[in-house]
Structure formats: structure tokens, C-alpha cells
Length: 257
Ligand code: HPA
Image (cartoon, rainbow, N blue to C red; front, side, top):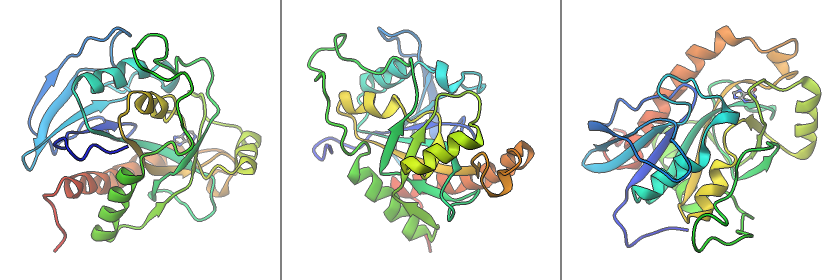
């Protein structure tokens, strides 16, 4: 769903490795109250090359909120209250697919929800919400195309498409669970795309995921005996530099030479 008649006002939801967006100019924080309780943190508003943007740290500014305890409804409701026209949700994932390795970028086009017990609908508490919202294609096609176009422009190797398996966390998966996810067709595994994606869909906000592969998932390749966390920091840091460049290019101010 796109909104061509409205001026663009994109929101970035940052996950592990992206707790603030230093490229925002004139940034200030605004706390948004919601009927669902507190969002993860105050919204950071600012602009990039004159284009207004808002940033939300999904796990809180200090990265203290676990994936299963994030108040997804408050976060998405607050972004709707600010009248954003689209959400790019950045998140780190583990790779299940043999060709995806640490540092790679992925724009998934499908997802499977393995979470449980997370409040996952606005139906019944917000007006005009369909009980059975269409979710055949969970991610916004136009935002996905814009993201992959920007990656092409920048010469970044990015996988366009793939299935995101969303697990409950906060623990990582067992090797058998990852085998099951692979059998189900999942390419990457993360903990935060749901119910974030469906809540955005219910409120009619175009939403796409931009994922950074932090590690091989449990039992796969280098993670055959366990996931080595000391290696994750530098990988995420380098990949998040690419994510920032993609955001700047997407809003139109950093064109490659
Ligand atoms: N599993 C689930 N979520 C993740 C992983 C993982 O291996 N890596 C980064 N986020």
C-alpha cells in the first residue's frame, strides 16, 4: 500500500546494532503517549537532506528490552500518531540459507511467525480494523523495491527476497529448531518482525524489513557447535554502516559517484 499523494515521512525502526541514527540532522526527542502503554523509547525526529524522518530504537536506547517484551502495539501506534508514510524495520538475523553469511544484507519478502503470546492485533481496540487483515504478502512491495534499488546503486550485495522465520526468544534456537525452520522454508531467523509487520499492516502503514545477517543460525556451518558472540559486534557494526548509507541514499542525498 503506498501513499503517493502525501509527502514522504519515513520511520526507521532500529534493532540490535542500530540503537541510534547519527545521520539525523536537527534531531530531537518526543515522547508519544499511546492507549497501549509506553513505546520502547521516545521517538527521535529529525531530517536527512531536508526530508523529515523519525527513528525508534526497538529495544530501547540502552538496548534493554527483550524481543518478547517489546510493546509492539505502542511502537506502531506511536508511529501512526506521528503520521509516518512508511516504516523500514532494521533487524539482525541468523542465516539458515547456505549462501547467506555474516554481514550480508537481506530484504525478506515472506515470513513465518513462530512467536507466541505477543499482543498482535489492534482489532477490537482501534476503529476500522479488519478482523482478518490480508497478509498474503507481509512486506510492502514498493518499499522493498526502493531498498533493493538503492543497494544496486551503491553496489552492495543484497539478497532481494527470502523467508524470515520469527522466533520467540530471547534465547537463541536449538540446532533441531533451525532444521525445522529450514524444512519450513525459512532463510533467515530473527525475533522481532512479528507482530510488528502485521500491526503496521492493520494501520495501513507500508512496512519493509531490512536485515543484516549477524551469524549462521544454530547448527549451521561456523555455528555447528554454538554461536560465537564475540564475532558478532564488528560484523554488525560494518553492516550497519551500509544500512545508514542505504537510508541516506533512499531519501535522496547520498548518490554514489
Ligand atoms: N536467531 C534468532 N535471532 C537472531 C539470530 C539468531 O541466530 N541472530 C540474530 N538475531
